Length: 390
Image (cartoon, rainbow, N blue to C red; front, top):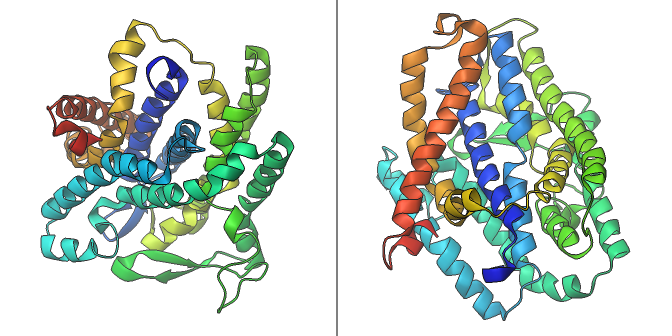
């Protein structure tokens, strides 16, 4: 999708998704902290639940955009991987090294890079997942070229059913999921085995048709079969989907936090507790999937390609991957400054109710602006820019 074939709504969606990513990471500062997690008040619980619910479609939207543009692949497998290496892998390697160097424990961080992302740059999990999606694209592309509308709808229906699985597992345990502390204190949910899963088999019935690959199929469906929708049809479909997705994500997150504290605040817990709280926010759970579909329908109506698009949206879309890679360096420092300026909780400069939402929006906006300026400037460095920003 380039030149005259570029579709403006994809660029609008990428830029908005990048902003939503920064909302997620700004909001996390209000329930993550130190060695565990803490929510100071009922007001903070409301605001973190609100902002998480409206922003968790960010990563799926990136995947849908990538699918819409790249899938099925239009050139040889070798050429596809060569292009992705320059665009994705080299900038990823550059920023992985940067995060390792500034982590405070560079030796251990470089060791970690042999097996996984640097744990002090947790947002880089996205790139590993994206690489996995790219690996299966050439395998699925011949099928994607020939698949019919009804056949694809069946697979999307199966995938939507799998977004219920996190809730089915929780229900099947008759209580909160058990959490096992893994390497570096990372929580691993001890899942209740379903439909063929066992201690000797993780590959149950829905293993191969679940997860993030569903968004790959969603992008394919909208490119091949969705067609043009009127504003009336769009709003009548998108708004209920957004409302339902928001309710599932926001209400589920809020009630889990409140239950952990027995209705009393502050709510203190471990990282494992936060893993349980976030179950309704998972990228492959129902609320996020519904929100993503609703948002996608609305973004498709943003066809404006005027002066603002050409001067602001298009450059930011082209630099969006680099913004994702580097934004945590800037956001973390902005977060410290804003917390120091406005305070937290009862001592907050704007009071216990309004300090938190103002801080979240301020941290997000300043971080987005600074990251955008930095990324677009670096991207224009002759020869080197594309290897740093993508």
